[in-house]
Figure 1 (spheres, helix red, strand yellow):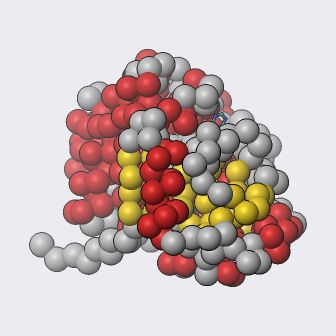
Figure 2 (figure 1 turned 135 degrees about the vertical axis):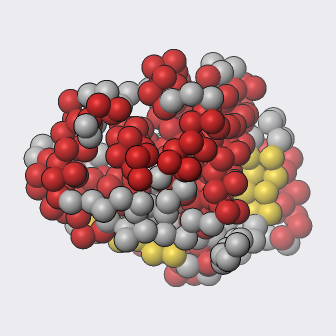
Length: 337
Ligand code: NAD
């Protein structure tokens, strides 16, 4: 064996119903005096009930518009800790503040997007999304509490869980894939597939949240493979909903790569306990891509960012086939015959 692996350092506290107590203990441990809370209205009241909040930012928006980031950075003057409570968009806004201020983040995620376990930031200006990685944006602590995800409607919870599944599957062939992140991804697929099958229960949401953390650690280490590159370009160009777009694209990328990556595909299938489309049918996940008006133009945009690590060469025609099949919602296993 010969490989290199980087593990990002952060503290993770996992406990259903324990977020408020964990947050209070963490604020005390870090010696924070002035907490800037970043959270949409309503979602953080109970979690922060044992903490003094000096100021609060609520104008969270998808893909972190630069103007929102700049307003939040101004509000951070005098703060010594950022606490984010919310989905990937909220964590993303906290990261944008940490990027320029160097303030530490304690992240309390309420979806399965996984941004809290990566050092990747994203900002959008005039419909152009820029991303980068910087260890300053990696939350120092993550507090997971499945009870906070209970208010996510089932369809959004399923799409968000499939977004986590996509982190795992793409980690199998991403540019920095190695045996460690592949092992984390395999364990993540196992937890997510059992959690998603039981998403109506708190136990199912807890499994899904655990799987989401494993998926994010795998993804942070392995980097973006073909799936994430496609979704990133589509999301930026057509302002598509994040989790739903990942959910739609994943079965097609898996079907496209599987013949050239039999070991990875076998590992994914055995961790899923079957094929991905059967899981989708069982849990009611949609593999219909919506909102891409011209698949040929979209393929042109995606082609330059296809990773060289992809197990199979990718042509423009392949991307057109993949996007057309996803738009039509065809059975992925027959899409590349
Ligand atoms: P989101 O944060 O935009 O949340 C989606 C919707 O769910 C919003 O309307 C939000 O108000 C609502 N919501 C969140 N938690 C809820 C809860 N518990 N109950 C009820 N409603 C709730 O979406 P997301 O999918 O979590 O995150 C997507 C964003 O995160 C994208 O911008 C994506 O690029 C980013 N992201 C970044 C990374 C990274 O590593 N930097 C990783 C994954 C995702």
